[in-house]
Length: 72
Image 1 (cartoon, helix red, strand yellow):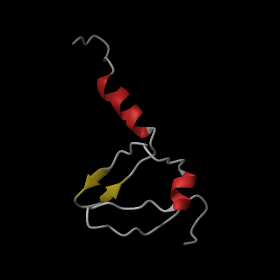
Image 2 (cartoon, rainbow, N blue to C red):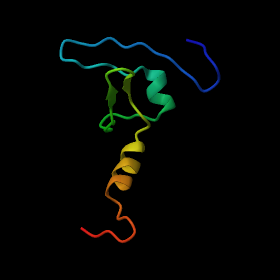
Image 3 (cartoon, rainbow, N blue to C red):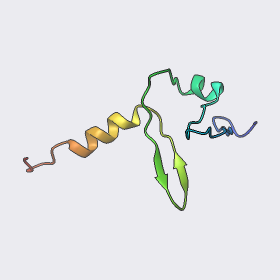
Image 4 (tube, rainbow, N blue to C red):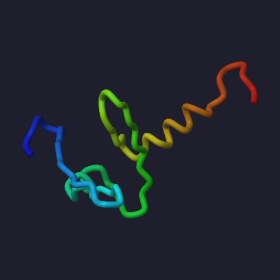
């Protein structure tokens, strides 16, 4: 599907076990390799999002970083 530069849309079919195949072009663009862990976010009103794979590390760091004056 052709869209604005840097914007893409793909389709995927859900299999019997709830699995989807990420299209090859998407895997290539986002450097997704076998064995990678992806973060899947869901919003009942807006749908499902799969942010870039580095987003998990950023979210983890932001969640657990120590705030000024806070201790465990």
